[in-house]
Length: 119
Image (cartoon, rainbow, N blue to C red; front, side):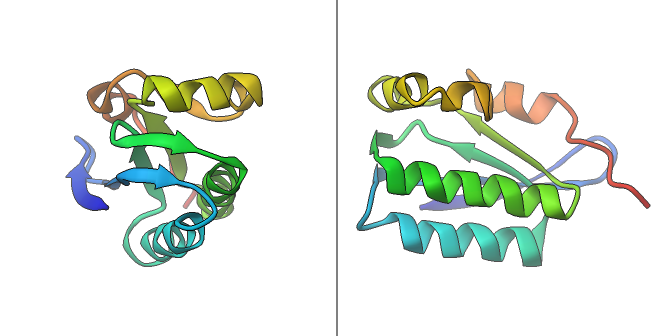
């Protein structure tokens, strides 16, 4: 899993996480823990780049939903981009494509400013 930090024009930090391989019952829990750690320690603003994830199951979707909720709790933002075509079907069949903020590219996900953090 690759992780990098992007700074927005207004100085906020956005963490871009790029998992690889499968996001399934064998990998979802560790991914969930890493995601939770990033949101609590680094930044409440997260972009998940799924270009390298060719398979996702319900455990993987659950970890993404949990990450979205964690970000929402701290007035952050949670976006998903570059969904691999094989994984995209899972989002469509489960109707999760209407739950998440999905973007075609990482650049698009980073361009749209994250929600303003309430002071």
